[in-house]
Image (tube, rainbow, N blue to C red):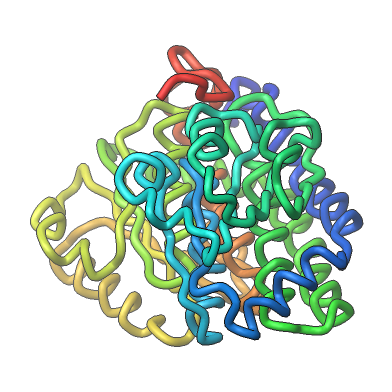
Length: 349
């Protein structure tokens, strides 16, 4: 009997399918600038001692790949939630720090407090989807995403922010702009192809979810962006219990929760720790646990991603979780992405 998928085809669904356009539009607007080049030069000359990366929710998780890129390039990079930064680590707001602040709206409660707290005038690089926001107006450098208006749960804005942050990392690391554009443009075709098959993905996930009562998303390195954001959007879009944590942390306690009602979604990730993540999958299955592996390959399942460069893999990794939100919505008989209690912009801390 055919499955009725009409319940999922609302505003959130349309935002999901619009992600390739948001990526293309954002890439078209990203340009080299004198201001950003000057900051990058100052970093290399040692004028600044650290780069503080900050955001909330999916904006915070999206910073994980940049954190690793900068750290591996020899910079002292620090990742901290904006609320923790302003209340418990304000000394990081120092003239010798560069602040990279990510906020889709540019006017959330924490972002407003950050702008007030930055009295010592640490230079701020803003990544935002809102050109007239307080963050954009007061930042020293602005990287605008071009995701357009978004209904509720972060999707277009999230992948566009990942793209902009990859561009920023390359600028800090002095990668030629032409090379950056070529590598980032390579995400458009696989993203479009994957999302075009949404119906097959959702229908394929429905039997996998039978009897599942709780979800764990686990991974390592750059995949922690999709791990954190994925667990967040599952809760936001379907009110389904989901937890995101590192693959290593999963073995330290949550492993005991394996059973027929628990499903563990593992991100294979990049080459450095891929075999460790595959070993976790095997160990779960050996104990008759339920798990799936999001990995690059030639298959057609929702868990299978096309082979892409490491720089754009974090963008592709969120798509299977988005398909999971649609499948869960079908099983629960609800419209995904429709907020009951939350709002698109969090204005209360």
